[in-house]
Each structure stands twice: as structure tokens, then as C-alpha cells.
Amino acid sequence: MFGPNLFTNYGEAVSVILFVIGFSNLLLQKNLIKKIIGLNIMDTAVYLFLAEKGYIRDRVAPIVVDGIQEVEAYINPVPSGLVLTGIVVSVSVTAIMLSLTIRLYRRYHTLDLDEISMLLKKEGR
Amino acid sequence: MDFIQNFPFFSIILSMFSGIVSSVLPVKAARRLNTFLIVAVGVMSGILLVYLTGTGEPFVYWMGHFPAPWGNEIRAGVLEAGMALFFCLIMFLSMLGGRRQLAEEVAENKQNLYYILVDLLLSSLLALVYTNDLFTAYVFVEINTISACGLIMVREIGRTFEAAIRYMIMSLLGSGLFLVSLCMLYDLTGHLLMSNIKESVAALAARGEYTVPLMTTIGLLCAGLAIKSALFPFHSWLPDAYGYSTVSSAAMLSSLVSKGYIFLLIKIFYRVIGFEIIAQSKIINVLFIFGLLGMIFGSTSAIQENDIRRMIAFSSVAQIGYIYMGFGLGTEAGMTASIFHMLSHAATKSLLFVAAVGLTDASKGRREFVELTGSAYRNKMAGIAFTVGSLSMVGMPMFSGFVSKLLFAEASIGHAHKMLPAVLVLALSTILNAIYFMKTVIRIYVPDYRSDCRTITIKKQKAYAFTLVCFILLNVALGMLSKPLEGWIHSGLAMFG
Image 1 (cartoon, each protein chain N blue to C red):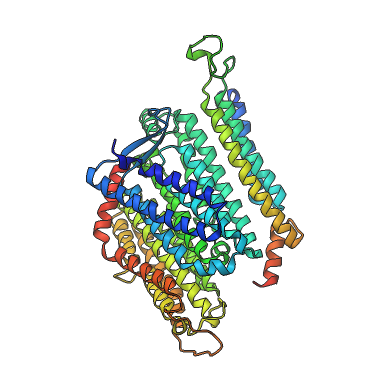
Image 2: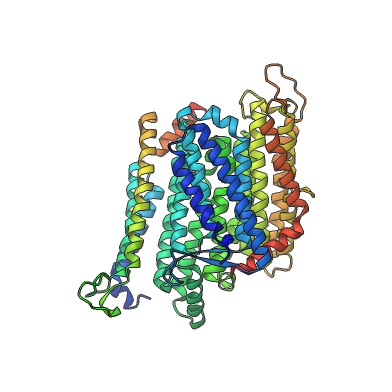
């Protein structure tokens, strides 16, 4: 079932495992802060995947400084660009999640999402 | 290149800049800018639609003057232009219909934030409609999520905060799956532009290489967008988000935000993966089953609901199920029915939300069914509009809902395995729809002249009545002009490939 590819691409395997860990934390944790940590693990796992895919050993970023113009000397810069864009997106969604968490905590003095739902039902609105 | 080909880019960038400028404008100016923006984008999309119908072929617009494998692209055909026009129309009417509630429910100093969010929502929807690049689509999916979250929580009560965070969590799960699958797709094909990916995927499929990774990737992609568009069982956030946010937000969330993701999914089916590969895969069977389940469970939850806004919200779950059932059929006719149902549901659901708020206003703001007794007499226009919306949802001929149900039934007839379940569930779901919508219509028309509730006449709320009339006309138009619309969808899908 597992070919030799699994051992060559162990970085990708690790990133997928991390993705699943982050995903299940975001889905299953009750505590909002832990959910946000899960979100960040999930997003970072994707960046690890992209970095693993984008880097080739002994090659450098495609910035020509010493006149070498062969394609074989450089890596594809697009995955790194994707990582940067992804980081920006994940920072903004993390910020919005954290600010929502603060609002909920000030109002209900708990970080437990189920407990907040219970309190809301008690409020009856 | 004709000047008109700049219009998709203009509409996206104009809405982004309006959002930015609105942050320093006073509320009134921000509102005017927002209205102007929606009208301007609508007019541009209309001109583009006429232009594209004339030329008969789609065009590709280079962003930043780099050719295909390197640059970013916008691609427009008749379906995209028509969808943009339709989104603008619904957004305009939703904003107009909810203007008074917005002034009451949102704090004075937060109101221009609302217009920023609506501008950003429009720009992200337009970008999702027009873009030809998967990563751009991801970025705008996130912008869409953030602005939708803002639209929910702008009415600052506990329920909306909880709904917003639940919405955020579900959406982020969806976009996480979308992101990882698009990275895997990039890894498999080496491209981010949709047309290039399609060539590579076709080559991979022809050689029979990487079948399992490819199918996994496509599956994750579909799962991500299905979670984001609230397919059953990922709908837990939906009733609170639609039920407690201010009415313009509820109308726009149900009729625009989820439709944006579904439109992206259709684009991915046709332009990234290729419809044949999707139609042969097992993935659509999964979508089909969840669509059927959603049709039943959405309706049964709606029947049990005691709050009119939440009932309409649960009905959305059922309608999203219809759309995914159409995808699950895996035929061109099924896709056409789904796209028509997107339009019909968007027009009807925003009508129902706007009409329901008129009924609750005439009942001291209470939303339980007992309190709504006789409210159609106290607010006649809202009563008529709600009845029209309900009849359309149930599938009365002349209204849009009938046509979409007919198209779904026609698409499923003759399908080898899926005909029986599709037709049976369609019939069952129609009956369930009829139960809860007719129950409400009867309830609001039971005479109960309470003196303690205020009566709202059309003269008092001219803009509101105008909105409802426009919504009703739109609904009837969708129901009566189904043939030309079908033709438009067919030619649009032909331009998609």
C-alpha cells in the first residue's frame, strides 16, 4: 500500500497529519482559544506542505545575482508566494476570531462554546 | 480589445475602493455610495451581458499583462455576466428592504461599517464569479467569509456573536479544506489558472496516472465548498445566523453568500476538472445523498420551529439540498436545474426574509407563530409578499419555485439509478414545504384584530412596499420567462468549458 514515495515525501506526510490534527481541534474542541490554535495549526500545515513542495535541494530563490540563468539553478517562486498570501489571510481570520472571542468572554465570562449556548438559551432571546 | 471587456475588472475594483472610501465617509454618504455602487455594477454587468450575447463567445482578460501560465486572469461569459447582474439586483433590493431595521438595530456609529462590509461582499462575490485563477478564488472566498461574519455580528446581541463565531468556525473548516486541496491540485498539475489545470487534469486522466490523489483532491475541494455553502449536515450555524442578524444581512447571506460558493463549485466542475471526469466519479453520488438528506431534514426541522425567521432559515437548508441533488445527477439537465434553482431560491428567500420582518414589526417585534396571528391584516403588503414567497417555495405554477421543481423532476426522469430516490424525495420535500409554509400563511391570515399592535400601511413605508413589489415581480418573471432563462443557462454552460 505505501510505496517508497511515502518515505521520500515524509515532509508532506507530516504536513497532512498536522492538517488533520488542526482540523479536528478546530471542529471538536469546546474551548474557543483551543479552536483558534487548531485553526493556526491547520493553516501552518498547509504552508509546510507548500514549502516542502516548492523547495528543491541545492537550488536557490530565483533572484539573478551572479549571471546564472539556467532554470536548473533556481526553484519555482510561486509556492513561496502562495505561502505569503496564505499567511496574510490566516492572520486576518485569526484576528477576527480572537476579537469575537473577547466579545463573547466579556459578555458571558467563559470560553466554552457549549456553555455560551446554554447561557443564551437561559436568556431566552 | 473592446472597452466593454474592462467591465468585470472595473466592477471588482470599484466595489473594493468604495469599501475603503466608505470608512471615512459619514453614514449618509456611505449609504449613497453603496447604492450608487450596486446600481453602477448592475448596469455594467447588464451591458456586458448584452455584449457577450452579441459576440457569442467568452473572453479572457489579462490582469497585469502577463500571458496565460504566468499571469492572473479574469474570464467572462454570459453566465458570469448574468449572475453578476442578478447578484446586484438582489443586493439592491435587500438593502432597500432592510434599511429601516438597519437604522434601528445597528448602533449609529457602526452603520458605515455595515456599508463597508456590503461593498466588500459585493467585490468578493464579483471576483468569485469572474476569476479564472484558483488561488485568487481562495483569497476572495476568505474575504467573503470575513464580510459575511461582519454582516452577522453588526447587530450586537449575544445571539449574533455566538452565530458569528459558529459561522466562522464552520467556514474556516471549509476554507481550510479548500486551501489544502488547491495546493494538492497545484502540486499535481503545476498550474493555478483554471483552464491550464483542466488541460493537465485531462492529460492525467487520459494516461490513468495519479487517479487516487486526483479523486481525493477533488473530493476535498467539493467537501470544502459544501461545508461553506451549508449543505446538510454542516448547517448548524445557519438558523441562528439567518434568524437573528439584521434583515438585510439575513437576506444577503441566504441568497448571495452561499450562492457565491456554489457558483464557484460549478465553475470548478466545468473549468477546472472537466464535467466528464466529475460525472463519472463517485463524488457526485455523495453530494446526491447529502442533498437528498438535506431536503428532508431541513424541512422537518423547519416544521418543528416556532420562530418565523428561523423557520425560513431551515428552509434554506432544504433548498441548498435541492441544488446539490441537481449536481449529484451528473447530467447537463441536472446542472441547468441547479443553476435555475440558485436564481429562484435567491429571489424567493430574500423576499421571504424581507416580508417576514414586516409581519413581525406589525406584531410588536415578536416572532413566535402565536403572536403573528392576523399580522397579514396589519401589514397587507408584507402579507401578500409572504404568501407569494411561500407559494413559490411550495411550487405553485406561475412562480419561480415551480419551474425549478419541474426542471429537477425532468432532469431526474430517465436517470438509470437516481430517478426513483430523486423523484420520491422531491415529492416528499414538496409536501413538507407545503406543510410549514401553508401553516404560516394560514396563521397570518387568521383574523385577530388586536388593538395593541400597530398597523403598517403602504403609505407609511413606501420604500419597503416598493421593494416587496419588485421582489414579487422578479419572482413572477423568473417563473414566466423560464424558457429564455434556460437558453441563457445552456449557452452560459457551453461558454464555461
